[in-house]
Length: 294
Image (cartoon, rainbow, N blue to C red; front, side, top):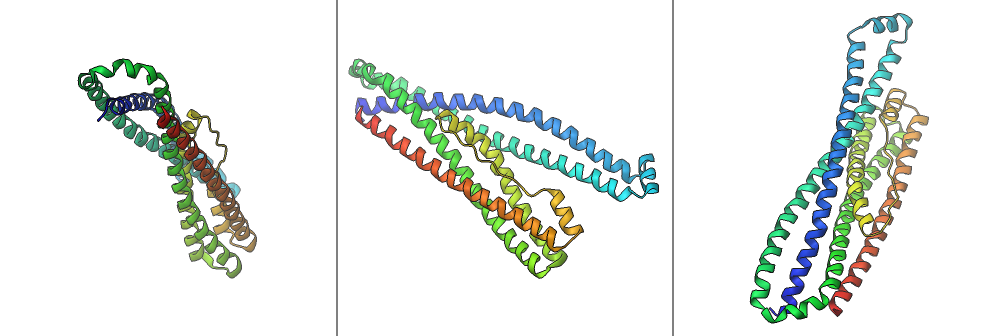
C-alpha cells in the first residue's frame, strides 16, 4: 500500500471517529430526555388505570354514577383516558428502545473506529517515514470531506430505515382499507371489525416505529443541513369504540375515510423520503468526486 493510500485511510478513520463520537453523545442526551419523559407517561398511565380500577370496584363515585344512570358513560370515559395514556406510554417506550438500539450500534462503531485509528496511526510513519511532509499539505481538506461523507452516510442509513418502516405501514393500511371497504358496503359485522382493526393495529405499530425512528433520522438530516417536515397520524382507540359499539354505515365510512387519509399522507411521506435519498446520494457522489481529485 502506497503512503498516500495508507494516509487517506487513516484520515478517513479519524474523521469518521469524530462524527460517531458526536453522534454517540447526542444519542445519550436524547435517551436521557426520553427516559425522563417515559417516567412521566408511566405515572400518568398508572393514575388513569387506578381511576378505572377504583370505579370498577364500586367506589362511592361509582355508586353515585350507577344511581344517576351514568355509570356506563363514566366507565367508558375513564377507560378511554386510560387507553390514551397507555398509547402515549407505549409510543415513548418504543422510542426509548429505538434510541437504545441506535446508541448500542453507534458505541460499538466508535470502539472499532478508535481501535483501527490507533493501529493505523502507530504504523503509518514507521512504514512511510518519507511521507510526513507530503501528508501535511492536504490533510486538513481531506479531513473535512471525510467527515462530511460519514455524516451523509449516517443520514442515508437513517432515511432508509424509516423508508422500510413506511413501506411496512403502507402494506398494513392497504389491507385495513380493503377490510374496511368490505365492512362499509357489505356489513361484515363483528368478525370483519376484529380483522379490520387487527390490520389497523399493525399499521399503527408501524407508524409508532416510524415516529421513533424519524427522531433519529431528523437529527441525522439536520447534521447535513437537510430539512424534513412530514408527520404521520394514526387511528385512535376512540374511533374503534365508536365503530364497533355503534356499527353503522356512517361510522364505517368515517374509519374507512381516515384510513384513506392516512394512506395518502403515508404515500406523500414515502415520496419525500425517496426524494431525500436522491439528494443524499447526489451529495455523497459529489464528496467522493472531490476526494478523488485531492
